[in-house]
Length: 341
Image 1: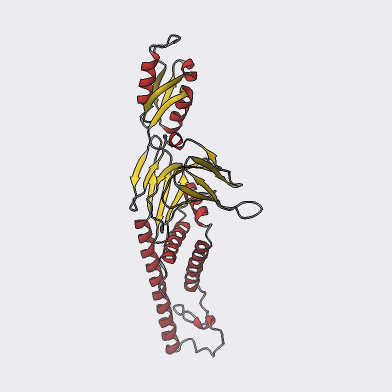
Image 2: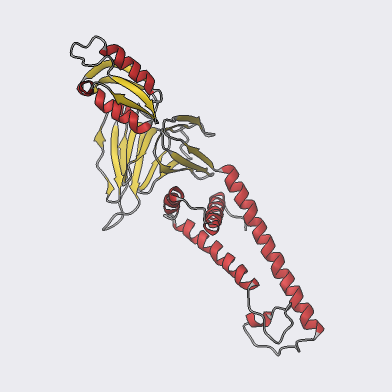
């Protein structure tokens, strides 16, 4: 019986993780992603089935041969449920039968390994990864029409099936403008839980021990992975609301200005009364180029109606310095400068 599309997706993912485990290819980020994947019972069962099959094949080929048989003959009678009279070691029929069975087992093992290899190639070819470095912002259009904004230090893994559009937030923060397809839910998985949407705009930010979820449009359902004392029900958040997802559950939604909260992710910032020091700290966190302060008093000042791209800190430094030229209490020619790390 052919597997359903959903079962086929689980099989492909299990093969991928099985191969990575055997080859020892799990770094810190992949270990976090693996823990998220293991939250599904179907995933655990399929991976376990693959491990048992692999162990059986290895055990069958490594089975110890009886000393009274030729070295190139495997005693397959030892696998039988009932005991039959054993043929004499040098009888040709016994040798031929054993050789035939060994060949058949080897062929079966080769077929299984070939299937696994084929599935492994198809998984690598269909899954998609977005990975950004320091000072790098990415905007990508997915095949379903969803637009993804990935901030610096971010890694996302996408796995779309006929049942769902799956995304694993390995690290960092990302904004998803999800294409509206009611029959095809969009689910972001994190270490702390999942965020489910159909057609909306929301962001997920990995804060280390928690995940911040901000909704710009539509509605999302947020569910914690595991909560002490029972199962955490879904918490719904709508536009201009924010929740925190952690090991203790999902917080009560609070109201925010989502457009301003998400400006950093869209790589466009409109400065409206914030302290210069707060902007400098955020820029230095996201970029390799560091803003150096020549006149410390500028850090407490506030500037209105200033816009810049966070990916271009030199633009911010230039605009602040031009504004600072007319500041009456300045103690230095320039307030800020930029240095490469």
